[in-house]
Length: 243
Image 1 (tube, rainbow, N blue to C red):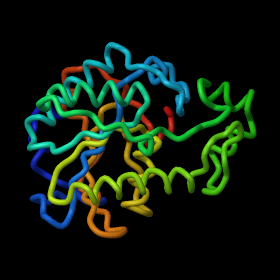
Image 2 (image 1 turned 180 degrees about the vertical axis):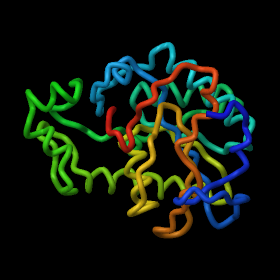
Image 3 (image 1 turned 180 degrees about the horizontal axis):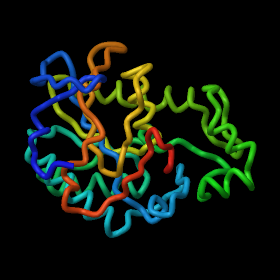
């Protein structure tokens, strides 16, 4: 990983091609940030909607991404999932960016993983086999037993949330702090049939949203701000090791 900010000005499309882009009046630039590390991330546990706090490493990560974002251009608003790990990350970003008030939006919550929440994958596969199979299934309409969401339900919730945010902030740059499962979904919506990125804690991911279903993924998975800070090398992405 680079310890410079050279990637800040270079945007990328789904194929990783660098592009030079300025924010236009016809779209919103939404900087989607995954929350900082928690002890359950470190333990490899499924978190879902259980309200786990950041650990000390996660707080340092959140401060670092906040300092980075404060140098990259004006932020008009900061939105966050209402779960503690995201909200604390958002508040630390806000403190670095002039003290903006964080707007809580439950539409940015992590996927409800039902019976799997709090379990490590190898345990879940043994004690909740049906729920674990539902998580691994390619069926998007399959709900996870124990009150969990299907992929279709997650798609509807989080894409609607981001579209609503974009309509309020055309021509502006805003931050949305969320979770790994949500990021997977947003990326899949913007870049269908593309290889999935790995979304590490406090990774920076940039989307441009305009009218209707016009989504452009500009860059993602960027943790260059963590070059001097300890962080997990696994994330909610292609390896599916955290939730």
